[in-house]
Image 1 (tube, rainbow, N blue to C red):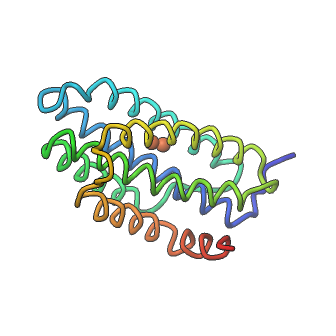
Image 2 (spheres, rainbow, N blue to C red):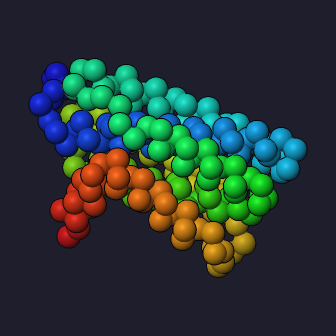
Length: 185
Ligand SMILES: [Fe+2]
Ligand SMILES: [Fe+2]
């Protein structure tokens, strides 16, 4: 089955996911640069996640042409926001790095699950890609959550999650929120 080139929702999902992965690449790249001297214990983990996020970005980009989708116009915002978030949290130390990972990955996780349900059989290739990427994002989330102090998420997570949500909302012009509401039972 050929991909649905006229599907507006599919284009929006691709645009926001590609932008989000670009933001994730910038977060982990900044964190890794600082972690090499600030929190070397986390450097191997950050290097591995960075590799995953770069592959995710490339996978979403590769699906775009056949679906007449183009990268988000707010890529610079994803880049600046991601870079700043990564740098700030890395300077604060390992606890902040893990809180950032947990907040970002938890937010991404919810959106991917909504998207997988919405895409369903409309675009099997995209659905498979989303499912495979979700599995890796789950591993990133699990890594951070198991290393954060039990029962305390800290004050950093809510604002980081809010910034991530705002970026997602802006880059989809509210589509993600509408999609989440539409899927809410
Ligand atoms: Fe990712
Ligand atoms: Fe991730």
